[in-house]
Image 1 (cartoon, rainbow, N blue to C red):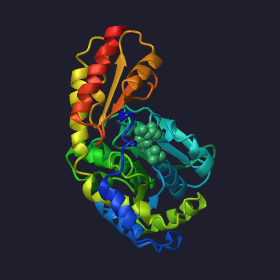
Image 2: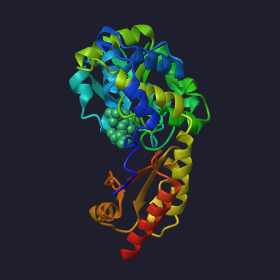
Image 3: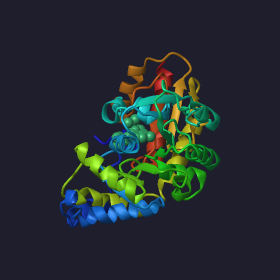
Amino acid sequence: MKYIDIRSDTVTQPTSKMREAMYTAEVGDDVYEDDPTVRKLEKLAASKVGKEAALFVPSGTFGNELAVLSHTKRGDEVIVDRNSHIVLHEVGATAIIAGVQLMQFNSQNGIPNPVEIESLIREEDIHYPPTGLICLENAHGMGTVIDLEIMKKVYELAHSRGIPIHLDGARIFNASCALGVNAKEIAKYTDSVMFCLSKGLSAPVGSMLVGTKEFINWARKGRKLMGGGMRQVGFLAAAGIVALEEMVDRLCEDHENARFLAEKINEFEGIEVKTDRLQINMVFFEFSKGVDDSSFVSYMLENGIKINPPENGTYRFAMNKDVSKDDIDFVLEKVSEFLATR
Ligand code: TLP
């Protein structure tokens, strides 16, 4: 059975060009920095976001955690959004891997207030841990994007205090599409960025950590420490090159599809779409009348549609390249049918 899968954009299948590139990739041992395909990907990735160097890592989580490990020392404090992927969805790894404490700020649907961030930076005091890093997330997993003015403010205030900025840019190219700017314009207000090849860009595996040459050299050692020194990994990097060369520009289509789905689904009685979180490829909504969550998930599955259960009562439908306009019409039909049975 062919499923329509709107659980995430991580579910995207690699394209035939990716499969072909993987099959024919020239490879070497990447721990010796001998893999020509990985080198090509790393050069391309750095240039896409205007940084000096890049490192291929197995996942977005790995890239974020490696960034925290590489920027900080044990016992530092890291300022980060309480609704970020690092806080909510990385199994508390910052405490285990980097040994840091998190100082969490309250964002407005993922949009930080620079004044609040500034107030959380520690002064020198015998009782306080030093603030070692500030993390932002753009595009934000809540479906929003942080505008450049805010990025700039946070960057300037961090740098005036000698603190680096790491960006979880898992979906930086979605942010660049939503803001109508080149990804370099976003990345210039950061010291390091992690971005994913395996989400909307549809590569099967992998993320990039980018920054200065010095930072990436240091992170390369950290990647080894974390067990991420991969060998003939050019087979995976080959798909990543296709992702960066061919899949970036089409992400805006997913945003259009999300807006279309949101508009239609919002017309259904009993559903409230979070229209203030509709800037990328994701649609968030709640049922306004009581609905048994598991019955909705299983109803959709029985009809060939994979969705995730809600998080704190909110559902997310994620558009991606394997979801067509016809698929969206079918999803709408099935949601409407489900509501009619309530
Ligand atoms: N996000 C996944 C889940 O883990 C929630 C998803 O389906 O959206 N940063 C952000 C902003 C992310 O959304 C994700 C993945 C990651 C980092 C981690 O990437 P992976 O899954 O490659 O470790």
